[in-house]
Length: 342
Ligand SMILES: O=C(O)C1=C[C@@H](OP(=O)(O)O)[C@@H](O)[C@H](O)C1
Ligand SMILES: C=C(OP(=O)(O)O)C(=O)O
Image 1 (cartoon, protein in one colour):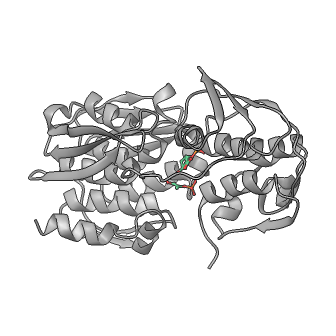
Image 2 (cartoon, helix red, strand yellow):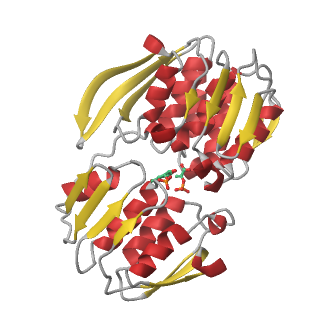
Image 3 (cartoon, protein in one colour):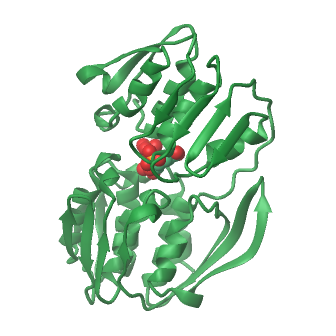
């Protein structure tokens, strides 16, 4: 079955651009609509031969790599996927790769490559990678904060909840959701316990209990460090007092679904007062959501966000396409059952 991971396609393209053989990468209908020009164009500048549909901007991508030139590149989007793709290609270039980022995005690739012996220097928004052969290391992968975010929001918006999520990775380039929930007034209802460092990354247990949240305005540099959490934060905003605004988040339109349109349409079905904006959404808190039939639109994060909305809604919520959750969280429904059964 064709896959659905933009991250895999973009990172693999970077790796394959340095290999002297022909590769063809494709995916499901959603992945074949995701913008690939953002990686194809700089990889072509490095000398890789890449062809794709629609002027080399859409998969399937045919890549014949090898002999890459070093580039200095101004990244038009704050994307960790583009950055990681070019770093992987840069490993086999004939000189240093220099990237200028418009804003910081998650830095797991920088940390992991450095741990594997690569020379990676970050200076503000500029990043330089000197090509090296990586050495193998044992890696402890911390719990994924994007998956944990569903339980944080569930614990905060449910009227009678206490949820503990153990071993959550809190890398500062990923932890925007904690800051956003604190700005919404979560306070002691969202606590970090047993803070420690594992595998070079900050980790803690996160405890979320029922809270009274207030609206916030969110935009600018926090957006790339919590981009995948915006759909579930929209659910939290439905239960907050006042009007929440997300801006500078147009990237949501080019994820597995157009997450601005799909989050708005599905939460509206449940009674949310939510409007789309070109680069975000506006959500006014309501006293309750009501369970009904909703649709995942082939998007794992939407399926799981709707489950969280359903937990706090009155009546039954039926999520069509609930199996999509397995794209990033195969045990999601099992974990949901275990927290609801106490
Ligand atoms: O590097 C990654 O693994 C990811 C980066 C983000 O994409 P962008 O950095 O392109 O926004 C995020 O949305 C995606 O789910 C995973
Ligand atoms: C992993 C995700 O997406 P992608 O398909 O971009 O890898 C995501 O949306 O959380």
